[in-house]
Amino acid sequence: MAEPRDVSVALSTASVYPESTATAFEIAARLGYDGVEVMVWTDPVSQDIEALRRLSDYHAIPILAVHAPCLLITQRVWSTDPWVKLQRARAAAEKLGASTVVVHPPFRWQRQYARDFVDGIWRMANETDVRFAVENMYPWRYRDREMLAYAPDWDVTRHDYRHFTIDLSHAATARTDTLEMFDRMGDRLGHVHLADGRGSAKDEHLVPGRGTQPCAEVLERLGVTGFDGHVVIEVNTRRAMSTAEREADLAEALAFTRKHLASAVRVPRR
Image 1 (spheres, helix red, strand yellow):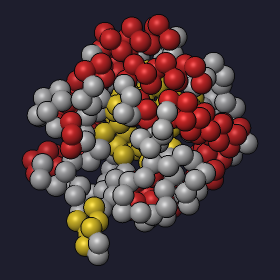
Image 2: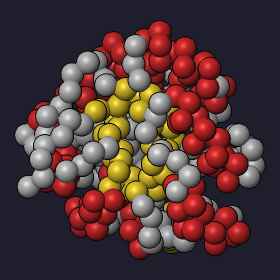
Image 3: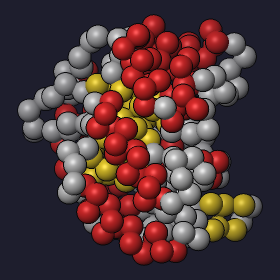
Image 4: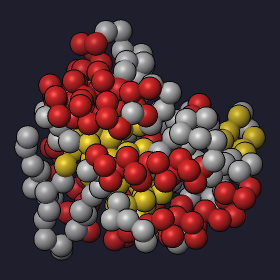
């Protein structure tokens, strides 16, 4: 068994949607998270390095990761060129002191980007100390039909990347064996997006413990692998009827994560 390490638990700014990036910093600090992961999307603050630095300083909470703008709704954020997006994400991470850039595999219709993606990620990873952690995705489903929307593959373990992000909600949507994927990632697992799911065709991002994913087991295994990355709570709180209800969900997710990490690794406290 590897020597236990401190593992920071961060809040994704996506977890407070439809509230703002700035609100995510406030909530993360108030609830005692160790840091934040910034989802770069249509909120102008999420795209502004100086604004993010001011929020980090004001709330005394570090930015641990930057999620590059890879979503359908962010196709025009930070350029329409996907490589420019990744270059800007890397620059943001370097300037903000974040250790990781999270990136999705390309959409299949981004043909040239998809052809060059594996080699291109290696080239970019060799130019910086920031980790490019490529995230597992899932097939798109509608009724009994399935569409392979990502290339070279939604299952990133089928290709050679230096670092992976495992997202448990995405694994649930893909209906894949999460613990087998975890094992395939091995010591290249650099980042965790913690959320639950029930295997719905919709990417649910439930609070950990509310679905069927092995959230507790994944957290407990991190100590065995000598994991040296971050665990990021990335849950959907859109249905919360109030800020208090949203914060209760995020406090529950943090408590769950720290409880199960504590059985395997030392967890730092802010």
